[in-house]
Length: 282
Image 1 (tube, helix red, strand yellow):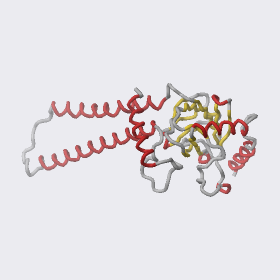
Image 2 (cartoon, helix red, strand yellow):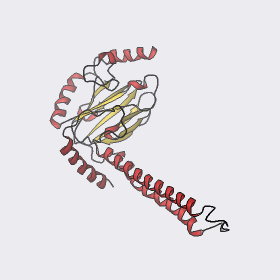
Image 3 (cartoon, helix red, strand yellow):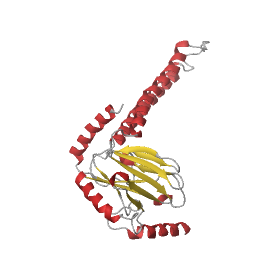
Image 4 (cartoon, helix red, strand yellow):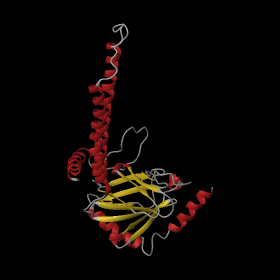
């Protein structure tokens, strides 16, 4: 079931890397009309399904418009002064029932394939647990010695040159490029949503439940997302920044993270949590 989307994704990835080169930061931009560039097999599959549905909709719209124009011309009053008394046409009634069903089947089959494809991976190279909080993200790396840290949005006044407003965070979630990463989402309070457009990641974080998805970032770069579930006053202050590194770079980051986030996390997280609470009260 996963074979065809993965083959198509592999071909697309090779083409993308040959044409575009290394990935830059993937984030929304002004007057954007379409998807961000796809950098995972899931997002490439989503874009393929979207394109198929758009072309199908266009074909149906053109056909119905042409049929309506023909009926207006062929059966106008001047050409048919005497109206027909036929009230039923078995062939037409079967056609306008069967054709929409066939169109829905054409859409449903790849849709179900895509849903199962993005649901989970059977060959995960690592696992990351994501916990939503009001209003920050907590990341846990159980396969790397239990590294755990919080990720807060960088306030506008603290942004450095080149950093994106309301998208940059103090601690990015880091993954190795080219590896299957299992993502487990849950929440400590209300419903959040872990959403990274360019990677095709969209999963709710629900209290008391653990929901699975996966991602395979095709090349190193920084990929931005946000919580897109209205979760309270500071809903807009829950950005996500995923940094994909080479395998060697990821191994080096793991060693650094074990020291930085030792003894239960980043020592500055308490100050940022207090600042977030103060912002809520304003």
